[in-house]
Amino acid sequence: MRKLEITDPDIMRMAIQDEIARSEESRYDHRLHGVLLVCQGFSCAKVADLLNHSPRTVQYWVKRFEKSGFAGLQETERPGRPKSLDDMTIEAVASDLRKSPETFGYRQNLWDGKLLSHHLATQYRVDLGVRQCQRLFHQLGFRRRKP
Image 1 (cartoon, rainbow, N blue to C red):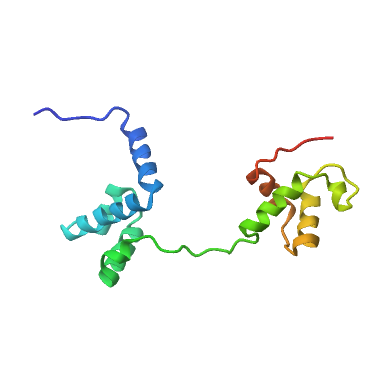
Image 2 (spheres, rainbow, N blue to C red):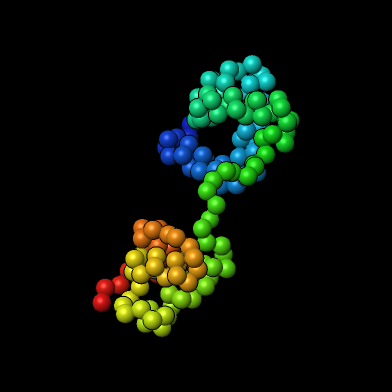
């Protein structure tokens, strides 16, 4: 039997890894495969090499599996900084941005990061830096305009 080969294996490897990362179920299955390989006698370093992870990650999977069984490989809440703006506030800000700044008593006629930062502090008691406000414009689909 002749050896099968994949066309553009490097590109396909990246595409498959992206597909695995796309859903919680596929990440769970990926961890299961890693632990299964360790059960079959492969070292964590070898499994990590095969699955393109660090050995520490595979060790973490195995320890979680040993401690909690299959549930230990499921997705969990990821720690991180809480959002400064909840969904309702973001909707309200988007509504504000559709209006002229003059509506709120500001002298400017266009929104910018600095004005939005001030507006959030006075109207919503939320302290966001200018750069984060610029990101918020982008997140809400607003584009920068010059007067």
